[in-house]
Length: 121
Image 1 (cartoon, rainbow, N blue to C red):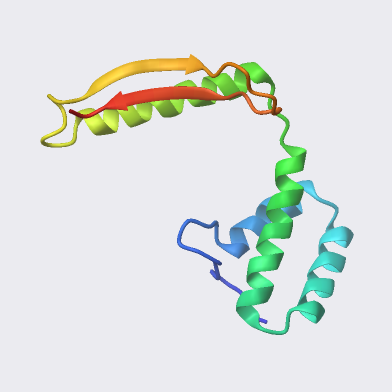
Image 2 (cartoon, rainbow, N blue to C red):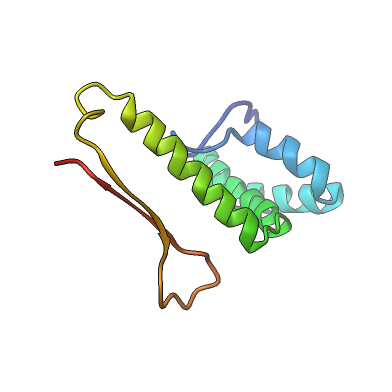
């Protein structure tokens, strides 16, 4: 199967890039077995791409450990990027009110929930 730049959605990372990243961090033998198993299980090309991409992402995400401070910094960076983008959007720049970010109380998940409130009157 020539998978080249195949992706399973417009937001997805192309499969060839996922494979390159995985080859740097996951055992090559394990990747080969996974790919062969999924090729056999999913004969249709797009079904294979979808499931193989999801499997690679699962493996890569589990290897990427972030501590709470790093996640909080990522949330703050995203908040700043959103604020900057919306502030430059014609017609919105004078109407925007940013209430700032805050930790969400009462969360029971392992995630670090932050809330950014943006009001456009």
